[in-house]
Image (spheres, rainbow, N blue to C red):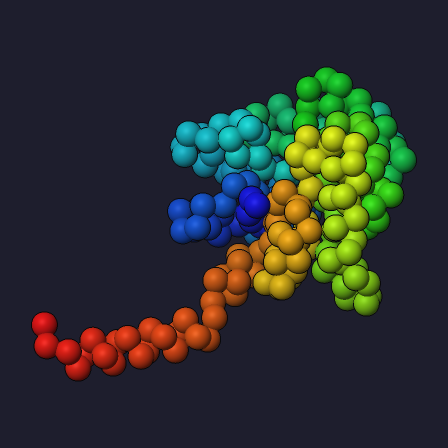
Length: 227
């Protein structure tokens, strides 16, 4: 399973890459807002950083960037996507899973511009992403679980459907809006390709009270042993 960082803060991205080797980045308008920087400034920083790390290209390190969510028509989505894609070969364009969004993603993929069909909340929506050869599909987890839905089965259904039709790995499943370590595990058990989460979620997944307890026991033993 690959880990993507869900963030637009360059310092977080650098830290996560150097500390635990994230495999990509996903951004959205809210993350850009929280960075406190203009949209194009954020994209420029991400592109420059990828180049400095010699990880240029979506094949090496995909960075999902979202088009203006006010745009609803397919032709306008395509135009916006082309502008963003031209800024860096790392950029994968996030397109909403609406009827016009599906048409836009289909057209962009035919032109070689890779897409991430996002705001997916059902297995039925996930099917169309694979049929149209999107690089990524982003089924959301946290929002659904907030409303009492079973996301473990939801992701399992998507992976099984993709396996049935030879789509698994061709359109990669990004479990998005992941908020807890348990959700990471549920997605891994279901066979999803990628989990994207905030830095704190990943950090919490690395922690366990028994690890800390074990360190305390071993430190005490070390301190009471002659060197």
